[in-house]
Image (cartoon, rainbow, N blue to C red; front, side):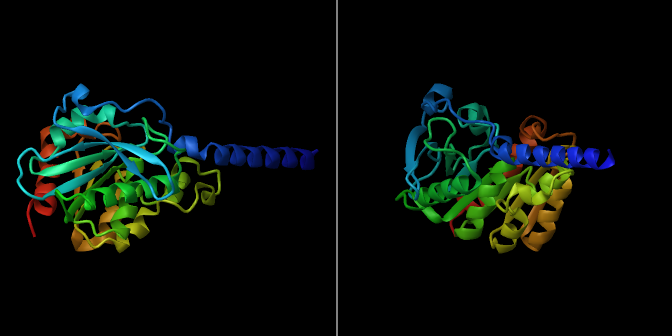
Length: 276
């Protein structure tokens, strides 16, 4: 009888782990589908919808917002959003955060909005590379002044592209140290290797040579702020850490408000807007 219950418990455990493995992609990327309209429909009259090819044949849709106060070549920001966000949904954020003297490219991952393909960790890393390369190839953008921003899951592709491309600065908001660390926190019953080896932000940050701004909600119970502290410690003197008092994981823009806008714009002014 005892052996029978042990076998039932083992089978239940294995089944739960297999279900977690099968649903891993949906847990990471719950968004997807829908459309990506013209930015003018969302109060960004000077922006335009662009398409960007990836190295593996997908077509990504993005919003390109030119600098509002610049002549000649400008710096730029590559914006990589969170897993439950879309470019259209972030229009109010872009209206507040876009820097006056730098362009902004807001990328829709494969499988999100009107972009083609199926969302995977490897795929969104290739998407980030494609977005950076598209900006760097523009005649009106200085490739030496591109800052990359990534929020939550977007911190994974952002850290990856900053470790593999010559970015001038990196902003990570609500960033985790690794997917495996997140799996240990939220699914302690399951082996962490089920999360895969992608998005090891701690390792990626070690290879980034650009200045780093880390922003985190002080009461984030999804991705603990201790993870941003660990990333800041790994980056050393290159890192600035700003914790937003009273902000949870999805409240950073609202609670941070004007102080967050100033923090972001000041960083971009130093590393994207100022010619070097």
